[in-house]
Image 1 (cartoon, rainbow, N blue to C red):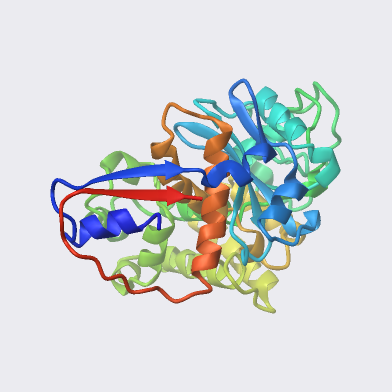
Image 2 (cartoon, rainbow, N blue to C red):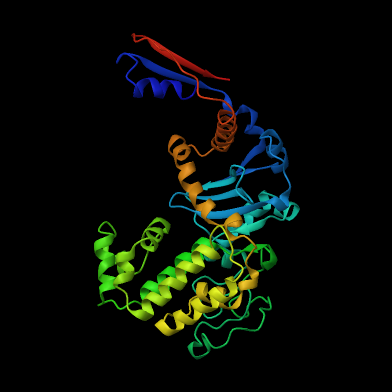
Amino acid sequence: MQLLGSRLEECNLLHQSTTISVFRHREHAFISYFSTDEALTFCNDVAGLMKVLNFTYISQEWRLFIDASKTSLKGVLLHNGNKIPSVLVAYASLTKENYEFVQRMLNSLKYNEHKWKICADFKVIAMVQGMQQGYTKYACFLCEWDSRDRNSHYVKKKWPRRRWKVREKNVQLESLVAPKYILLPPLHIKLGLMKQCVKAIDPTGCGFAYLATKFPRLSAAKIKKYVFVGPQIRELQRNANFEARLTDKEKTAWDCFKMESENFLGRRRATNYKAMVKDMIKAYQDLGCNMSLKVHMMGSHLDYFTESCSDVSDEHGERFHKDISTIERRYEGKWVPSMLADYCWNIIREKKDSQYKRKKWCVLQGSGSLFVNFL
């Protein structure tokens, strides 16, 4: 019934003078599971909420995605394998990512009881580990990789294991989450590998010039900074014209990147993935790519990746920003538990709609008012 009013207007089945009034009680079944602490709205009973949503809840089968957009900071539970809808469990408006607020979020969600794996970009990973922001010498949270020791890059694969001690080697604060509960972000690693590959391409060559013509809507600043997103990368990977304009070394590195994206960071893992990653690292070295944190992760911590990167990818968390945008516009300026409860109601509605076929409605035109009551 929620869609009835909008669908009637879209099909011009209502008179212009008809008004639609909506009376909603749909969030009442979920409102008790959310609490507010100043700017933070959070779920106070995750297991109880999952039961109401008719989801079988085993904490080890879920991962917590933490990320911020321009308007909010979110904590979202994503199901491993992505067969169950995402569940929004924490939300803070007009709040940036910082150590204190993430700590407050984890404490409110009783993280020590659930022990979810944490899925986030490297900025948030460094934050929850208590590492200094913007300090690049010891940027890896697994080892003491020295990003400034360029002579050892591509030569030294194994670095000393990191010892967590406050005020030593980029560690400022106590770690909020043990490193074993951190999931590496396949999407951000893929974007980083793409950036280093394109960055090493000759800026005066035909390959780089082709990028400006292929993506005319992409600003010159983003092209110079080599900022590309997933759809643009996939489009380039299918483009034979781009490959034809590359030199031999550039094409070798690009082919290796494509193979690694499809056979390791994608939906499947090839049996010879270690050899493919090794070839990619060698091709990046020959091309003159910088050893960034993402390249270092592929070269030195390949065994730390999960068996199926697609099942625990951070890409599904990034897609959540689009899913929640409609509800954010509806509740703009009214960040209350009702918003999170409303989102949970939508999960139930979409789940029920998937079990039944769409019904055909027969409506006559006429003036008046249409009242829709959500129970």
